[in-house]
Image (cartoon, rainbow over all chains, first blue to last red; front, side, top):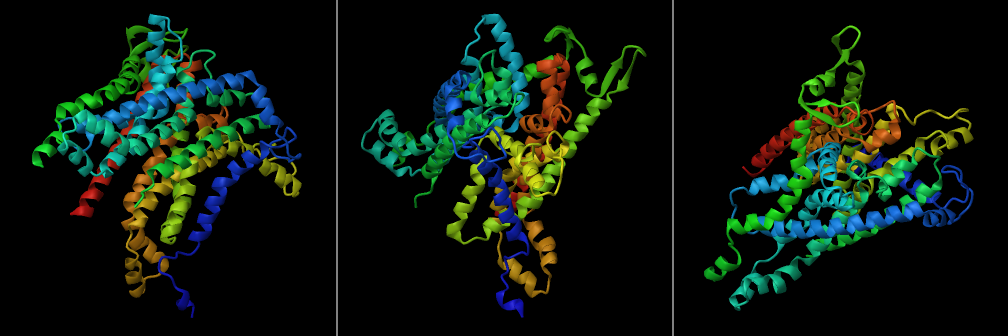
Length: 267
Length: 304
């Protein structure tokens, strides 16, 4: 009977659903990317290959300004959050459990738990008060807000790397009369570098993707690429949005691939 | 050796705090701290021009469920608000169920691949998970909008004559949320299924259990922690969803997140918006507490 091919872990229909899920997961993205190269201005009817939506996006001053703003905020938030997260990871790993450690974990991971729209509202009110009090309207608010919610994302890979690191090398350095600072600078930091890079990349991707908090915190004329795209929805829909999306998508995939290569277990 | 270890490794708790302090300060300033201001604002009086008057009032909290009828001078149940809450809960629960129905077979499929292939399949799930939620919602929008590819294909094939109005309906929001949150269900399910001992299935089949019975009596009870984790990871962001219902639901199919935005950026009833935010926060925290308790119980049982 069919018992010969009986495989215990096989459940009927599961593979079909799984393959369908993968297809459905990628079909909309592939379609979106495909139509960014469409010659006509439809997002559903193919009119031949063209790069003119990319040229349009490139020539659009609003897009250029929003891109620059996204990059400035993303790089600043990534650098700041990774620095803070590295320090916090060094403070909370590889030492005997201390009083308040759980509290530190909870505060660091808090942005992962609170709904984004609630944080956005909170920052709208709080930064609104500061804006009135100080008169400062600049990008600083967005950078601080992004830094805050990027911290847990930077923290996780750095902490994971620290926990998997061998202490013997640092002990050896200390045995050879290296000062704690020399040990950190010459041994710990180089060993930790892949984790820090991974954390920074994740933080940058998260900052680049943010819509909700940016939408609430930004002052007039401070659109980032995602909030600009959200604003475009009200107007007529052209493949220009697809072109911008594709570029953003490409950047994300490159960074994520690097992230996976950096965090891959080597042995 | 032990002295060296003392100096190099066992630094004091004070250093732990000092190193963590800068991160904590930034988080207190731009994440946790402002939440307290929201609580404070929910008890203030609304100002017609936006913002608030600093006078104590419970109107924000009452406004969640009731509207004040000026003509009859009494409070009446706010049907429009209840509709939005009900839609949020219903859509979030349905999204959770749908992601489970699709996500469980998917996670099972990945976990039963040969070891070398597994990482690749997992990577394929993770990529959409980390890519821009806005772009993924746009992608769904382009599939289902009236002049989108689905309708174009159906009309071309002669199946329909006028485009199906899927965009700007609750169905659209449901499709969108299921699409964007599916990886959140698959990943924790995969983590538990991967640890599942397949010999239990042999035992079950040896004892003449059918596939269905094995699934129900052996597999599901054991992977329950993964199911709960996945469900909460999907339910929580669904309940607070903002981008997906805004793009796919249009103005008519608001969820709580959009309703909160309305109070702040358009409706100008800040205390109501603040009260709604605090309420949403409490619901989410309650769900997360359940999750933590279940996760801890699972871990305790696993090691004990």
